[in-house]
Length: 104
Image (cartoon, rainbow, N blue to C red; front, top):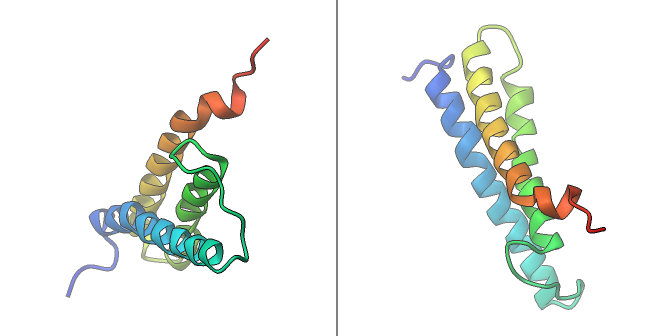
């Protein structure tokens, strides 16, 4: 049985779970578009809808942050936080120009 207070386990959760969260949210959006409940949006990694879906996928780590925010799981929590921050920094770098650069 693996140690419940482990930085590598927390890091794996923090990095892998947003991928599953992104896939679930993307699938839900795709079902809503195909059923006609949601309009088709511009596709591509730089679209507003994709930016939102990726951010929601990253935010699915909140569940794990709450779960491991207890006694004797501080290393696992640290791993989840590191993984979440890596995703957040990557998201910020990818969409910085869309969010903060304005044309004069």
